[in-house]
Amino acid sequence: MSFGYNEDLLQFIWEHQLYNQKDLHTEEGQPVIIIKQGFLNVNSGPDFEHAQVKIGNTTHHGSIEIHLDSRDWHLHNHEKDNSYNTVILHVCNTHSKPAYRQDGTLIPTLVIGARIDKKSLEKYYLLMDSKPFIPCENQLSGLSSLDINSWLDRMLIERLQSRFELFTSYLENSNHNWNQSFYTAIVRSFGLPINTESFEELAQKLPFGLVQKHQQSLFQLEALFFGVSGLLSVTQDDNYYTGLQNEFLFLKSKYNLTEISSNLKMGRMRPMNLPHVKIAQLAAFFHHVPNFIQLVLDLPEVNTVKILLDFSLSDYWQKHYTFNAISKPSSKKISSGFINHLFINAIVPFVFFYQKMKNDNETTVALEYLDSIPIEKNAIINSWKAIIVTGNNASSSQALLHLYKNYCQYQKCLHCNLGKKLLLKQDATNQTKY
Image (cartoon, rainbow, N blue to C red; front, side, top):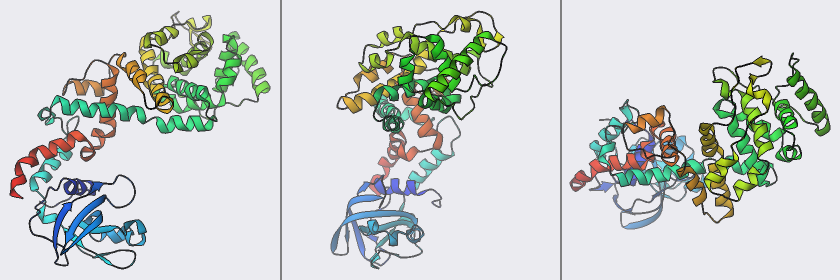
């Protein structure tokens, strides 16, 4: 069986020494003994660091570089990069060209292609070639619940930490204003997936400080949110709309406001998810709960937060989903499902970020919030339910979503602890032949 895989697999094989290690020799004919294979480097530079290898009669300490073929050393221009001068052994599947350091000295090359355990390749092939929901779907039952749950705990933290870069940018762009940063996260989440970026821009062009100035007037808040969103830019035969439009023109001139540059998407969505409804909810949100941000950053119990979100919109929106189109009367209050959406996409990740930054890595409140939310219902979670026990709260579903979207979907089995354990589980019975 030819190798035919990517460099990640060769790194995995080297990391776990899944090849015949008897009578190793470099391409130059010197005997090799691997004392320490090193630790995988996830940053720039050689693939493995802190390795220890005996070549001939000399023991070397340094780095290991892995390539499918030895010519890749030059294709990647490592001979011009001084960070690769620490490489003591060049490990390859095949050899076609010697490798040299920046100073011109030859780097010993070890070719392991013919020595790789074929069962490891077959196992990996089955994972990569599988067509079910996830690559290991038919093998996952071979792992213990402890293995699975430990990895899901890691996935949950990764999921929450994935927003750190975004929230850090909010802080930097607002001169480290926590209120503005949290406000941006909340407004962004009201955009739902389809209008997320547009609502983020809305939060930036309509700052929290200005919203606070007008928090006592729901009408003025609607004028500000709808106006900056670009939804008051045409003439309509609707008295309420015209009133908002005139109010916004005054406020726009007073505060030198500008509309968002992107057009809000409105097609193929449920009426309650239309941007008009979400913006009306936003205005009511900051009118009825003007101190919401500071209250939440004081880290109250989850039920206290949910009670704050029980408010009604202005009378106009009881009979409208958009301007100039009367509909059957219905409440446009924030639903329990959308409250859960707010917790999952704004409140929990931001509180997690806030606690990490402010409270010396103590994150219990954010995790407790997530534990209080029911497990999400979508196609991905339904598919997981057919494979493993998924738990009953959003902590489980968020972990499973992160695992699927960042690992399973892209077949990153070599970066997943579950995939690694499955690959090594079979190999453990074959180690005696080495």
